[in-house]
Amino acid sequence: MKEVKRTLLLLIEKAALFGLRKEDLDNVKDLIAHHEFGLGLDTLVTQLHEYNIEIDQDTYDMISEVSIKMDIPVEHFSFLKELIKKQ
Image: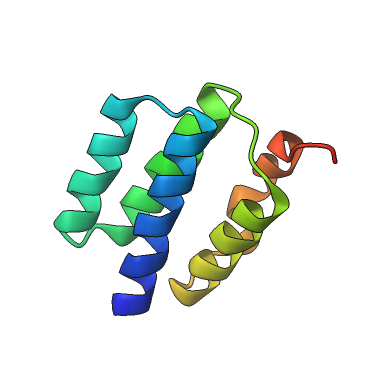
């Protein structure tokens, strides 16, 4: 689970660069600190979508990979594809 936690923390950093609000980032950090990795990922993804924050392909791939490691179907987050920046 250390790799999952590390990936989630990296996703938080990326989300901050993309412009996700500090309050939302802090909520996700708190969930991760309490080992609520699935809820943390779901919250992060939901807030990115809620605020229509563009992400890059690398971030989407990281979300997909970490969801697989947590036994969450990739399809659960497929709605994020619409947020991937067009190159």
